[in-house]
Image 1: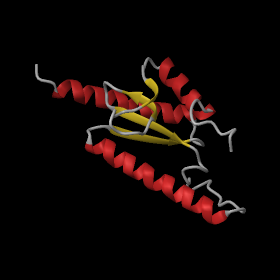
Image 2 (image 1 turned 135 degrees about the horizontal axis):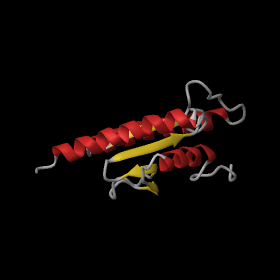
Image 3 (image 1 turned 135 degrees about the vertical axis):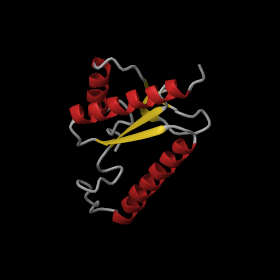
Image 4 (image 1 turned 90 degrees about the vertical axis):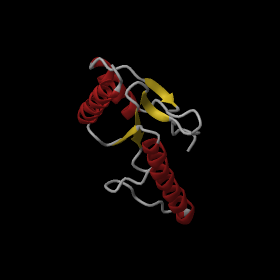
Length: 133
């Protein structure tokens, strides 16, 4: 399990490259909220958009997750805990005015980057429009 990276995974890097090519700038592995001890994979602070690129196994992808054969109860509890923490994180960030985007590692990076780019641009536009003149 030590070989599993917590950051800079292949899917994250591919999405980040596409976002950067699209002219979007972001922070990597940053806390959206300083008081929340959780980091997002990609953070757009000005637009208040936090992106999480979730691994199919670790976050229990409905399409690709397969239960472990050894020590299955431990891993079932671990994955269920990850899912619960993901839901809690989404709610805490939404309550603080952030938009949360979740992409699966199996998603086509081009599609994921396009979706994220649209959300970031829309959120940036809405935040600019909401500012007093």
